[in-house]
Length: 240
Image (cartoon, rainbow, N blue to C red):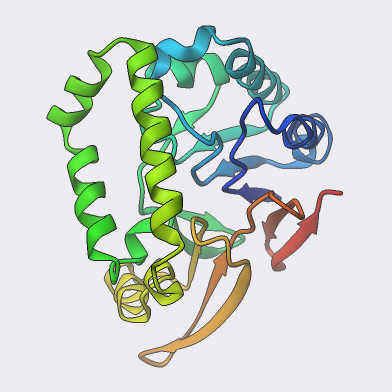
């Protein structure tokens, strides 16, 4: 059975071409899949499920739900940009929310799915920030603020993040090899698939005598691609 995986689409009203491409993907190639996994950062930012009233967000969710209703199972693993999605989003989109580090069987290969930011643990400042905002009490307090205030704070955080990227070493923002190998060993899987780093590639490893592979999903900034997996393995699927 064919499974498709995407990540880092970063949908935003300022990028209508990307939204159209994603809609065409859902209405076309995704219909042939048994399942679609979205491994985080579908949205460039998500301030909370009370933003579902926004026409742009509502339209994306409606398109996802149409796909789910045609028979393709839709799974959503939140990323660092949209970790505030909740049950209302799931109901509106027809997607099943899954946790980071979920193991699925893809074509007979146990496969670890994750967004990918936890693999970049050489960047301690980011990991500390991630731990803070993922804490339940932080989430409760943040979502209690007015929507407009939350959006403004997210925009400010995004601005600071983009500035910091200009001075960070590239190796800090990539997956740590030691952490990645530890994940292979901890979960006993033969394949890892993730996004986040925007460095599309297939990496092959020998982990304690076991052949393993790691697929990094592409972002949709310049060239939209999905990963297609079945009993014959995984391959990249160009979408334009």
